[in-house]
Length: 324
Image 1 (cartoon, rainbow, N blue to C red):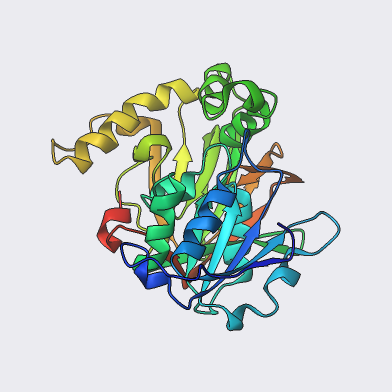
Image 2: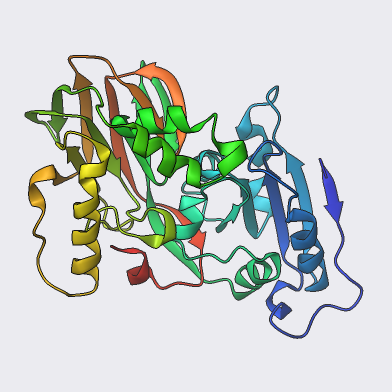
């Protein structure tokens, strides 16, 4: 599929794909994402049936990701196909270029696609492109040792990064359940003192990790915590104070209660949330970093800053449906 341009069908679809007629679609995909047989060929066929012209480009280790998007202004839609790390990297590379992005779920967890309430069926995903409903949301930018990268979901240091690390060997066999099994292993995660600078103000706390969240839903669209919005121009900084990740389960139940208007939180002692446009995280014991499910060799300190309204994601949902 590398470098391949797929012409539209001779007779464009007149049903739910009618909005694709004449659209120039750039598909950039990571062939290493996920497990099993890819649904992308079926998706490309559906786009062609609707009358779209598809240009497909494969990401390789030898080519900088940004080179796939040098002519992005010539396209009507960018399809970023891969896991959360691939989607966020492509969205960051396309930031403020005003071309709507489809977060095609081709990875293991696909949390960005879940937060955007996207279907997994290729025909339904083609219909999302045809519908053209795009919501403008924020992105995050993380800086470590002078190098900048982007993230759409969240960045973290501590127990959540350890969970990502330990899940790598389990993904091939268990898929998205690898994250659950890995979380259960974090019975006695390392605890340390974190030193934060939140919008210029210093804050210290003892705990097992820090998460800087833009989107706020975990698997099955369960809220990580309440009041996270990807379009408010701010991060939600989550301070993990609990002794282990399993003790955070009551907080997950609290978030569901709040989302369903069933009452105020009752398990507030395990974590604390703050809002910030920029946060620097340093730990007395250096922790590995993860952002959007990708573990990185760098350790704390890191700085994360919000990029308001940096990308337009295609979604069947309304903007308010993306908030927790």
